[in-house]
Amino acid sequence: MLRPLILTLFLIPAIVFAEKKGKTDVKIEGILEVGIDINNRVDRDETNYNKIGFGKIEVSARPAKRVRAEFGFEYDRRDDVVVVDKLYGQYNFTDSDLIRAGYMKKAFGLEEKAGLDERYFHRRSIINSGLKDLFFLGHDLTLQYRHRFNENWRLIGGFSWSEDKEHYLQNYSIEYGTKNIDLVLATIVNFYTYPERRIIASYTTPKKNTSSFVSSLSFKRTAKLFVSETELTFGLNHEEIYLNDRNAYIFGLRMQEYFPINTGAKTLRQVIPITEAALYSKDMESKNFDAQLRAGLTFGFAKNSAFQWRNTYGAILRIIDSESELTRRRFDSEVVVIF
Image (tube, rainbow, N blue to C red; front, side, top):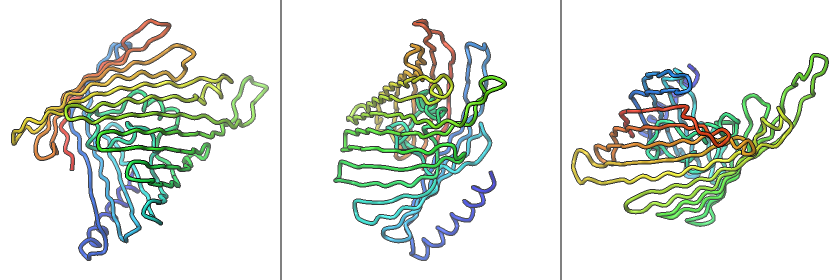
């Protein structure tokens, strides 16, 4: 917990000093969230009232024309720890090609790619959470190559090593973007070495090597009156391969619509209604799914809606054998500052 904090306290003054000396270009971005989370687990008949305290700061420095360094850390009151979100160096060996090396997240889909000012929900969807539980997403030591074909097309490829040294990942993404359209096709391949697993008292299986994958196809359209996102996810669950020696396929579908309304006023600048529906299964053959429905209303104040008040209601339904059961309800209300 102290190590990222010490590094940050050393890094930021050093960058600011270098900037004053005219040696580097520096960009600082961040987000602060404070509010309340009312979480009702219907199946346990209990309601938790939690305080939201979240902060994230990203620092980008360019000490030379073709060299860039990025550092980001975040604090979540729920875990009460400061963690490194990214820490890497980048070198552009041509105008179209660059290499990144360091600690970073995977290039995967629109939801994972969304920046600080593009997310209007305090937490990401059940699909994103499910993939993290299966160790596809997360932050790992990574060597990444990026190539830009032209203004619209970009290719990303990378190799990652996990901290537990039990698995490494390959990550590939091809992206197409214009002013109004974004299209992303991404894949993560997970190579995993499982530890010994005892079946009966007198027999132990050896370490087992296996691999799995997950892919996503994402589409985003930005119009004058609305922004629409659709994301399809498909993959292979390696936990089922290990535990039950069978293939289980992951399926996820997420659709989101939001409508930024500019008021023209000097105080309340924007009103943003947003809705999202997500469907996720970690084993399609079982025909068991989780469905998530969320709706929110964001009020944006100050220039570029730098000060926001976000309100979100969401529910999760568990579908088992074609019968649905409400398992969770959640309401978030928070004040957000984006800088």
